Length: 188
Image (cartoon, rainbow, N blue to C red; front, top):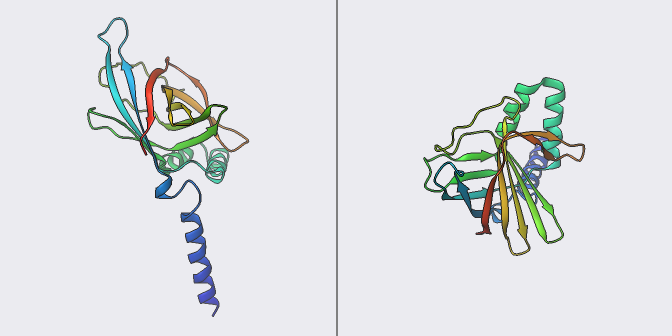
């Protein structure tokens, strides 16, 4: 009898976790955008990117990462951070790279919302040769959207992040100027 109650409780717990807001497949969001590549020294080109957000970070996930960082250190924190899968960043027509988004926040604004996405730093543009700095091990994508899901954004390819007492991720500085995103649009 106790075994049945325990199994039933576990089933309800698993069902409750899988149906939390922001965790279901119907809440999945897909954005497309354009990024201007190059500088005055190079020929400028436009590349398209696709960003898929499967779920947003929960307070519990961030609190867990804070605990891991304070009790176990940087490497276990990075392992736990990399284990989170909140979506993907995909340069369309690129060299087949797909960057996993490990943290995602949806913040309401006066005109719509701001979406902040956090990933480990990876080179996704073969045309750019960057000097790497070990203090900036993350990539941050910022989308500023109106109520219809249209707007602009920025990609900080070399950023530092921190976790706040409000149980969110936040950018804590960057090493190179951001790449500007324009024509950001919600697809789904």
